Length: 77
Image (cartoon, rainbow, N blue to C red; front, side, top):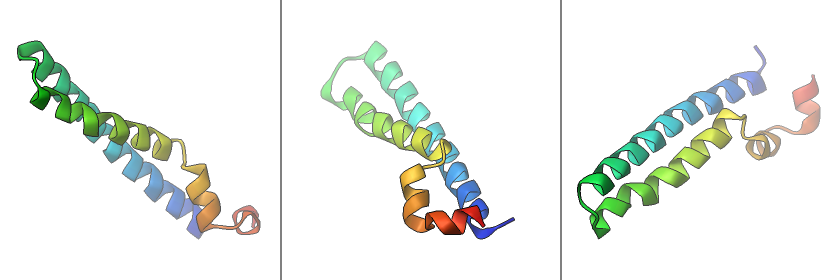
């Protein structure tokens, strides 16, 4: 495997972890909202939605991060 492929695999693994953490935050928020609506019940939403979005972006390969890390010529070799 080439270095950019290993980096891409690492990015996708991090994305999987972030997506699972984000889903867990959303699950907690839904449970807290069903039990009792308060300001505290929205805290998992504040962290869960961006974490899930970042995780999905990383799972898709984070193209901007890959282009920033490796020039286009290095990726085609």
